[in-house]
Length: 143
Image 1 (cartoon, rainbow, N blue to C red):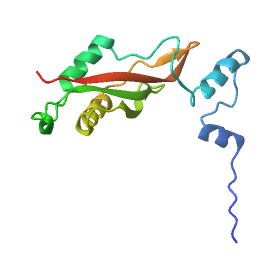
Image 2 (cartoon, rainbow, N blue to C red; image 1 turned 45 degrees about the horizontal axis):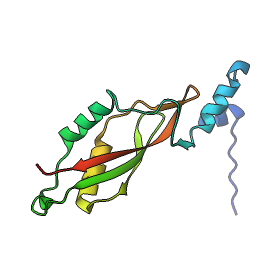
Image 3 (tube, helix red, strand yellow; image 1 turned 30 degrees about the vertical axis):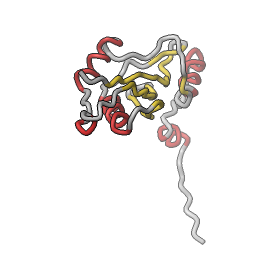
Image 4 (tube, helix red, strand yellow; image 1 turned 60 degrees about the horizontal axis):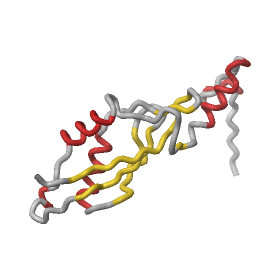
């Protein structure tokens, strides 16, 4: 049996884990809160995340980019697909999934639209940027 020992200093470990070596006493609570909130996903926060430009701009984005699946035009399938996702601390969207399905082809298009969205303005709790779960409807209507 071969044992390999890696010698790392405290500084190397701290840098590898992105941990500061010295934290000012008045910043300890803020630092601990930030570290804790890298894992938590909130449902409701003081300042909810939002699409740049607000809800109206998000609806414009969806309308502009939505493509009704050609294969369904003859069947006239319509409805509202509900999509859930997490707005990360960076504003990036993750864990995108359908929570209420209408039809597999419509679900796929709704997921495509949400994944296409640019970064959002992230949510904040107690002045700290946090991860927040968000749910939106994507409505499919034939004109």
